[in-house]
Image 1: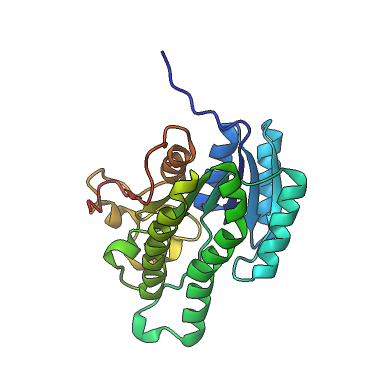
Image 2 (image 1 turned 120 degrees about the horizontal axis):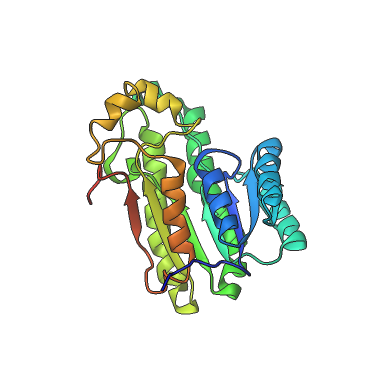
Length: 252
């Protein structure tokens, strides 16, 4: 007997879905049968991923979304409603970061990183929550092991991600009685275009891999697989949790 994850009938919204981890999440949910709104600051990137999903037989719509702007968020969700329906799976994946020593961090850096990574996630969650509650759905936040253990050169980002841990657990307590599960997936260092700056600053992928018990850094699909689990009926009694997907680097 086999177990298959079937998300047919679900409508997912994936922020930061135009590349890297977000792209892997969007395409993985689509392969499981969900209709996917691919939201990204770049309309071109969102359109590319949505087209790939549709070309593979799935259902998807690209959404240009600046999550730091509530008006942009609301407009994108209205488009998603019109084309795919109400949201049952929300994946808050979009983030912003700078790679520099804390002493060199500027007020503009702080405003951008916190404004996108933490406040932006709050904006999207607030706008999408009525849908998810109506559908008794799922919310999955991409955290980061930097938010759990700290990270050199990414102090403000780590602070924003630590804030997302508190947000995840708090909303889980508020909406659990309405049948909604809220969890976080916390990647270790993952090979993505956006993560290349940190990987280079830390000495390269091979050097970083030596610190990982499983002997490599992550790939986007590793993270997408965990999101798929939290999105699925297999996750029926788990909420308020943060799962480290880090090849054993973080064992807390």
